[in-house]
Amino acid sequence: MKIGVPAEVLPGETRVAITPESVKKLVEKFGFEVMIESGAGDKASLPDKGYEEAGASIAPDAATIWKESDLILKINAPAEDPRSGKHEADLLGKGQTLISLLWPDLDKPLVERLQAGGGSAIALDKIPRITRAQKMDVLSSQANIAGYRAVIEAADHYGGFFGLQMTAAGKSPPATVLVIGAGVAGLAALGAAKNLGAQVRAFDVRPAVKEQIQSMGAQFLEVEIEESGDGGGGYAKTMSKEFIEAEMALFRKQAPEVDVVITTALIPGKPAPKLWLADMVEAMKPGSVVVDLAASRGGNCELTEPGEVVQKHGVWLVGHENLTHRLPTVASRFFGNNLVHLLDDMGGAEGFKFDLDDEVVRGALVVKEGELIWPPPKVEKKPAPKAPEAAAPKAQAAPAAKAPPAKSKKKKSSHGHGPEPSEGSNLGRGILGLVLASVFAAIGIWAPNEFVQHFTVFVLSCFVGWQLIWSVNHALHTPLMSVTNAISGIIIVGGVLQAGSGEMNLAGILGAVAILVASVNIAGGFLVTQRMLSMFKKG
Image (cartoon, rainbow, N blue to C red; front, side, top):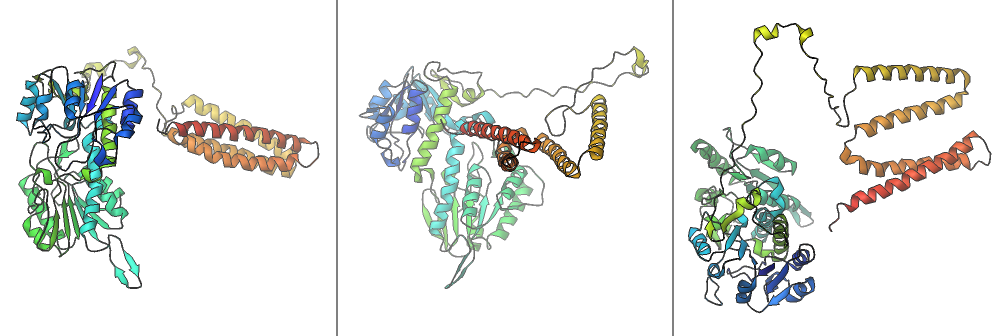
């Protein structure tokens, strides 16, 4: 199966759908043939030579890509190619599949053109935002880049430092940044601004993100009205009139105080909500900056001019419609990795298919062999099982002796490593404790005082060590093993002191045994740790 990657034709686009790193995986691991249009990666600093070395062939033009490929990988939705004057959607034929951003709910004429050719089309923007699909979610990976770049754009236009500066020439206070919308882009912007030293405030209609915002060191702004704005899938929903009024009042209060505002709010299938109004811009300090990440959908700021950077009321309004293309190399790499995971999920070159039982594929598949099958059917949630009804009074009054004895279930212990101790095991521990107490008493009577002291320390160490290891979560056992290697090193030092005394006595023999056992523990610990760490390395 052959993959074709044409150059993007959208004006100003600098990204490319896959990188040489992605090509290598697709060719060597998944068995695809890859062909890329000459110069497709130039604007992302990815020359043809790198693709050829990774195993791709270079096509002289886009027409060759569309004619000879089984799968067409693109970033943006098909558009008219100014080089040939043809619309890319008209080039998709039978037996071919297009995988790109499509926005089928916003561009129905495009979907109809794709249907006409008899091919298939997958909308990357419709991949469901579920845990399993995170590695295929291009919207999240690109939003992360856009959020970071928004802060860089704001810093470029802001006339001061983001962080506190103390110099001989004077002091500069930190900038105050307000992030509206704490989705992927918002959290990325929040983190970048915080790393530059700014004082960050954030607002979101979803109360669930409060902890995420606060964990990153930002202040979470709230309104007094309790209403959840969670629209599902990581998106917000349209709020009530009362909530919006309270929200606007909060923003008007913040406007004179903040230096930078970054807006990221979007609602699926609808224009961007207007959140930062003209009077709020006018209330901001001269030299302040508003970066509108929703500019491509009309903007969250009332005065934003999509695609333009303007200054109104002394405030910079940054309305770039695509901030990801300002970091094309990393954006292309992330996009390519998402595509690799999607093609892997669809079976690779050998088993490639449209599995309609796969929630990810079904949610993103718009056209299948010329047939419109989008939107996907809604998945009905299975009702929770009803609680068993209470038994009738007569049944409750039945003699307990006639009821079959219920099998006891072992309860998991609080630390999650095994069942809670039963009465029998508690009795066994009590007997063991009495036996040990008797042994200690005998040792205290017959053994020398020095031996008693050392033996007491030894027993207490065993007890503390056992409780420590037993209470630690499984996920932390490997780092814990690394720490215990240092303890084993101390044991070896003690063993060397005892065994090196030159006397063949019990202390010397025990010292030699301690050296041997501790050495095995150290060697094994490092081997296991190295093996575990190798599991987290990239293949």
